Image (tube, rainbow, N blue to C red; front, side, top):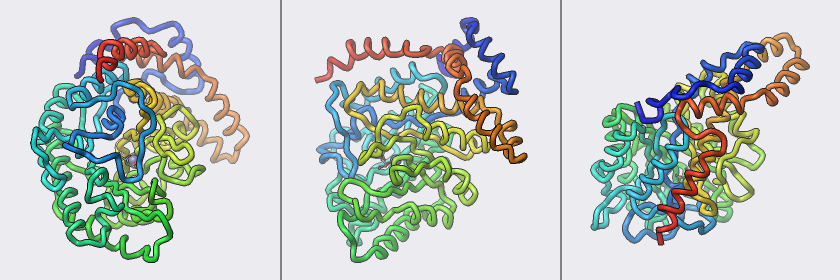
Length: 426
Ligand code: RNT
Ligand code: ZN
C-alpha cells in the first residue's frame, strides 16, 4: 500500500459528492463502487515524457526513428535520479497506484558504453528497486531507434543479416530484462516491440522486409519467459517513412493473432479520422490481451498530450463496459517538450482516469436494453443526458479518497517543484 492509499478517506465526503451520488443512483449507477473500481486500474506512465525521449546512453545520436519532440521548455530530466524524482512528483498528483513504462535506452550503464546488444537486467536494478519501494509496476520497450545501426531506417527487417542479428539480440535481451522486472515486482512486465522500419518513398519491394521482420520476431520470441508479456505495435507512417512502414496494422494484427501475442494499439498510429476505440472488441476476439498506447494525434504528430476528448472517452468506454479491464494494459505514449513535463504527465494521466471514470459511471444495462428494443431514440437521449451528469464531483471525491489534489490544485505543486527543482537544471 502506498502513502496515498494509506491516507484514504482522511476527510469526509463533500456535499457535492452526495448530490452527485444521488443523481447517479437515480439512473442505477453506484458511484462508490465506480470509485473502488477506478482505484484498481493502473496506468502505465511512459518515462520518456520526462526527458524528450533522450535516455541515458553514452553519446546518443539525435532522436531518430521518425519520431520527434518539439519545444524547448526548460527543466528536462538529465539523469536517472532526476527522472525518478520527477516521476515521484507526478505520482503525488495523480490519484491511484500505477506503473512506469521504461525504454531500453533508460538503463544505468555506468561510465562505460554498453551497446544495445549487451544490455542486461543489472542495468535496470535501480529502476526495479525504486519501483518496488514506490509500489509501482514496470513495463519495458526495446529501443530500435536513435542508434547508428538504425540510422538508415531499418532494424529487424534490415537487408543486412548482421544488422538484423544485432537487433535480434537486442530484442532477446530486452525480453530478459522484462522478465527480470516482472519476477522481481510480482506483476508481469509488458515488453512492447515497435520498430521504425520503413521507406520515405514508394518501395519496389513491400514483401521482403515483412518476411524478414516476421522471421526476426520469431527468433526473438523463441524462448518462453516467466514474468514477461510480449506486445507488437503497428504504425501507419513516421517522419521519413511516409510511404511504407514494414510493421503496418495488418502485418501486426496477423502476427499477433497467429502467434497469440499482445497487440499494441497506439491511438496516434492510424489515419487522422480513424479511432482505435472500435478496434478493441474486434481484436480482443482473436488475441489474448491488448496493450494501449493512449496518445493524441494532431496532423503529422502522433504524440500530443492526452486530453479528455471524445476519442479518449470512447477508448475508455470500450475497455470498461465490455469487461476488458483484465485483458487490457493501459499505457500512455506522448512527448511534448513545449510545456512543463511533470504537468504533461499529470494532465494526460488524469484525463485518462477521468475517461475511465465516465465509463464506470455509465448505466450500460439501460443503454443496451434500449438498443435491444430498437429504441434508438432513448439510447441517443440517454447518451446525451449522461454528458451533463456531475461526474466532476465524483472525480473530486476520488482525488480526495486517494489523497491527491482535487480539480486544478495540483498545478500549485508543479509550480513549486519547478521553482525549487526544475529551474535549477541548466
Ligand atoms: C512510436 C511509437 C512508440 C514510441 C515509444 C517511444 O511511434 O508510438 O511506442 O512512441 O516507444
Ligand atoms: Zn506508441
